[in-house]
Image: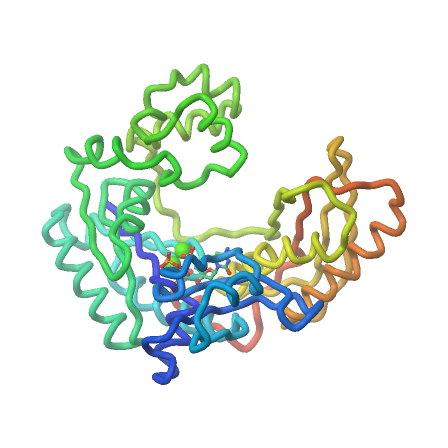
Length: 359
Ligand code: DCP
Ligand code: CA
Ligand code: CA
């Protein structure tokens, strides 16, 4: 039995609780890409801002148009959120058999032994964990309890904000069936547009596709995942350690382009996301690379050394310079997709807190 925890509007919530004057106002945490004062994208928005239609990934300029003048716009403070995240994770570790940090604001906990296999006790534990995080750090979160990770994550999402949702084994099928297919984690935008095209709307629709059909479109591994996960049957043991050698993120551009500004703005959330993942695991990169993929799939990469503790702003500048050089050297190349890659990962020195929950 697993518990999945996701912190509510995480970056924005941290800012909100640390500055009471922000309470009751729409608040947006931004990744500024540095070209002009307002270039960049929204990283996290509180629920008041979301009411006005603001969401992660949206250009800051657009968010400014949507929000009233009392709205608060703040730059991301990744190191700080990572520190808060580590404190949350330490609490979770204490209350689980095993746990794995899934992102800066998510973790999955195996709790079968801790609660002696009882869903009632798991619920009590979840209430306690929520209270401990709320009282200790001031943060609200949502928790899903289910027989496996995928269902627990969907349950946590469904419980948002500040919620708790339990899905017992006999309830799994009925719980999943009516949910929009997009609620199933781990499937990219391209896959969704295909699925939409063949009339798939709900997870129930997804589960009715033969595995052979899925395999033709997605390949065997993903097909197996979709087949099992849409039935609530995708199960995997929760391993504590995730060791990775690099963190990369690739995005598909809205339109094919050679415009450096366009590429860099589109990549801001990806850079942010990759850095957040490193931060959450107390890792730092020594190289930063870019990936450029043309419409004909020709792929060109560039990379450079970076110093430890490179900030997101510096990383964005480096990404800009690398793309600028690459596009100059590759005169005819029009980009379809673009990515970043942080590699040469090292454990961050002077902060051994990581070991307190990852080992
Ligand atoms: N994040 C980001 N850019 C994105 C998505 C997320 O910078 N496109 C960052 C900011 C978020 C954090 O990661 O606070 C966690 O992402 P979530 O998707 O869990 O979003 P939130 O926690 O902000 O909102 P929710 O309440 O929906 O979980
Ligand atoms: Ca969250
Ligand atoms: Ca999350």
